[in-house]
Length: 156
Image (cartoon, rainbow, N blue to C red; front, side):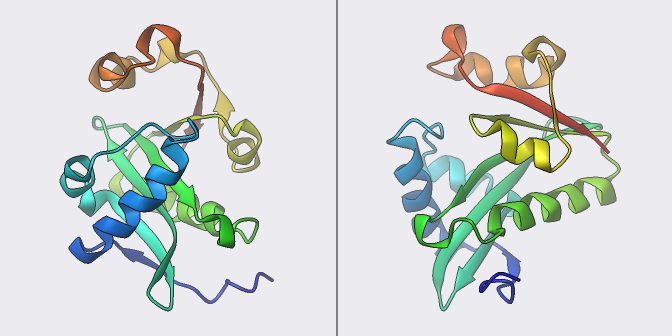
């Protein structure tokens, strides 16, 4: 059992935006995550789930719905001080539960950490099988013509 297993997942609030922004920035500066502006975080705030310890953000993730059957796990980040305690896994499982409750059929992720998502029963797929993602988000990405992330899908 992890020393952080008692921390609860909660919906993000307006007050959490600066902390979310800082955590995502930490990973975007190293190229692990794509950058997210504060405006983007505010626009998708209701999609974010967070885990905090004593008011400190430990981890975050969001669920972006594309259509009646597909959603994406986005902005999954665990602060380095809290890694390897299952917080990322708990967040993905929570968002998956919410996706199932909504009646979605597929959950996707673009990642550099294939093994993490494989452990959660996601399968590697060709990006061409995700036109909703490609034509809604990827076309705006600076890496559009040279994407090095792996597309993964879990059928719910």
